[in-house]
Image 1: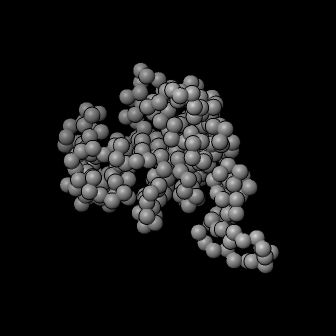
Image 2: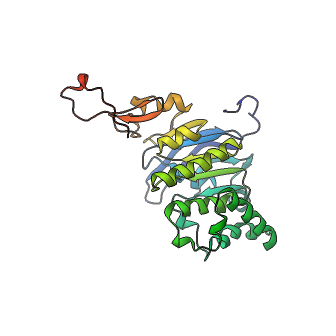
Image 3: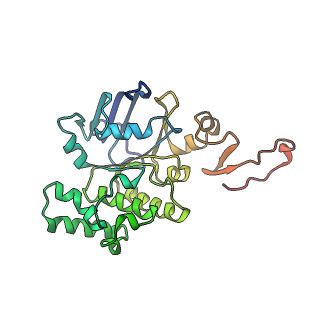
Length: 277
């Protein structure tokens, strides 16, 4: 359940105020984004391709530097404290290849704790616990580049969780996964939500949003927040979803399950079929 904003007004997990970012070629990626996320909230960030979702996540951990204010757990993100911020914020890239580089899964998972100054013994204990929670204990000696895409994404998630982050940021965690791998990963994220982990998840996956979101924030093609609200309200508003290029204009939801009408309009009033997508 979404925490009471009144009770938590002085205890924000994430605060973004008027964040702007442009790439060197002048292309605007973010045009004044503002929102707040409270501890233990699971928030899904949606938007069409190019709306700025990935750019926003990269700004949150200081990989990209925009104009505006970002605070994570009350601390303003700036070049002087970016290492501290990243050590307390778990980040999972859309492409797991960007964070898996060691010869074995175990070495990838203990890399972060070792760089925090933990002893190898303590780092190994953390890795055992984290991989066990993800049902990946047997993966420790395996080479990451030999894993399936779904397995790589789970290992990338493990490299973030092993740090014990206060906030977890994920960029398109189910993108490119087959149905079984996607379901398994959603199950893991649902458990983290149930445990009270603060999460901001960028995704196009309506099913993922339905399963884990306390709130949905939508970035529009104007590169700003165009809606911030409850999943049921946003996911059932098909005109809004279509207008923001999140679903095909012929799609709709039944009890937050996506369905689609046939594309023929010749006898549309007589066609009551709704094939499940």
